[in-house]
Image (cartoon, rainbow, N blue to C red; front, side, top):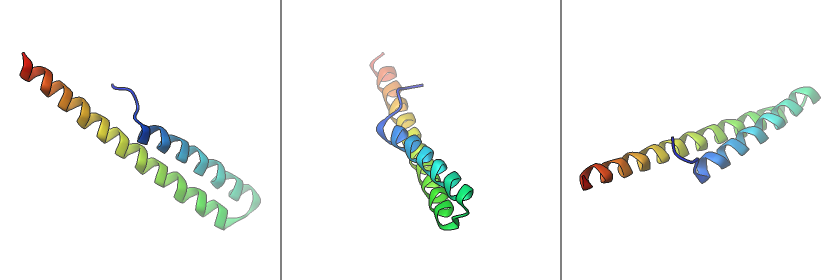
Length: 70
């Protein structure tokens, strides 16, 4: 497993912020804030998954290049 890239890290942060916002909205009975937090959390999850996919493609290309050189 490679080092997490920028998208993975930003996605994790966005997920955490969304979860906090969602829980605050739920605790305060603010459905708009709760929905906003859930949307932000989902957006962060998607960004993190995109970052993971990009990293895996990069790792595969690196491995392919190493195998070609052999």
